[in-house]
Picture 1 (cartoon, one colour):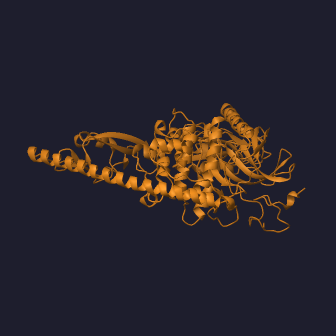
Picture 2 (tube, rainbow, N blue to C red):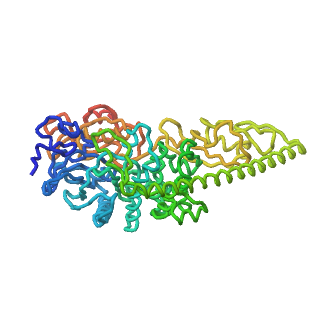
Picture 3 (tube, rainbow, N blue to C red):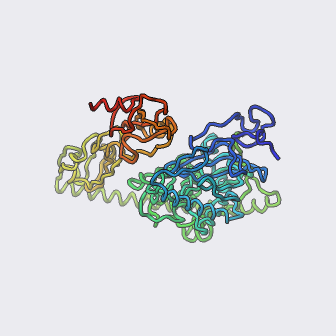
Length: 592
């Protein structure tokens, strides 16, 4: 049995008596990501020795840990939504905030349902091995064997160029896609797939992590959203859109895009307004056409146009007979290869090395030559088709321009405009000017604007710009567009208003940290303590919890004084006041 005192709290490996861990290079107690996370070195459920918190979100915390019964490292996921609960005095118990009991219970039930399903699934290559699910400290925990090493995001950032080839990516992603398909058939939709939700296991294969409950995976959920821009599909940003296998297909395809292209895709809300995402020419030349088509189909904004399930995406990525038949082209067939172990935490990240069993070398060579011939034939056919298409398009464009010039010459139409648009020689084209900084209500009253554009409006909170001012337009200034074109203005709705969190019962330092993180300016006042409350704990805030405020507003944190503080008088506090460290008597004197 390993001595717990010899374990590194950052990686849970035996330090061998060294002050600095020879495995991860860390020493001492690791810094916590949140004051609500369990303190490293705590024993949980008389079994799990808790180490560093490796991840947190609105649903809870994930810790590296040590299972004292099996004598091995593990990972513990704790359901602990900070919006809904605080820690008890023991540093473990979840104390649900006033008025949050129903939401907490509903979210906790979703947590148990999700991890119960994962626990029942066995033998999937990319699935973490969940082996324990229990309740303690008035909340719930899930435990899995796998230790999360380097994430796919970190690997791509560290490999020098930021991307890898499709041959390398195929080896990593195809087993993952099979696991995703099985998850879907078992009723599990991940909702949060992004490069940080995949990690390399010790055998070099990718595994899926960062599962979240539905209440945290939507812009309209009951918990703060964990959506990752660029990877979350449009339905997760909308209140009533259905979610299904197609939701994960978008996110997974976006991860493939990031892996092959080296940049994060444009976010779905932006694409929904003006979709300008494309495959850069540098990669369009080297990626197989069926891979480009698979990415385009898997990342369609409209879910009804999108690849619907894992099997369909697999066909598109592998150019299976079904996909080949649908596209009327013969694509090269590629055989799966065996990757070498991926780097783990503490090593220099390297790209995976492709290896093949020696006794399959000749067979593979024959298949490769045949595939190359098929591919070259396809490229020749594709080049011929594109040439004919280009000639036809050029002819149509020339014909259209000629007709436009003839009409202009016959009717002599010309004119001018102001306040945002200028007409060109053709009556149907206008030049867009900048509307930035102008008041939206003024712009939409101008006939030259409403007569030439179809106007749409998007409101967006902005702490620095007054309400009603235009802060964005989807058609750049000086662009020439046809009359009747839709132009979308992004209009400031002013600072975002949000409810003051309930910080009662916390220490002043904890409350100040929580409120300051939301952009609020904190002040402190004392309240009379009859001895029944711990000194320096929060009695209330002014304005009270739940009242709407915006970033930059002042909030006074009223704390209980030391019971021996005779300077603090009556417990009544007025509705608003200013001042640092004021007593209630000081505050009341303002109104006398």
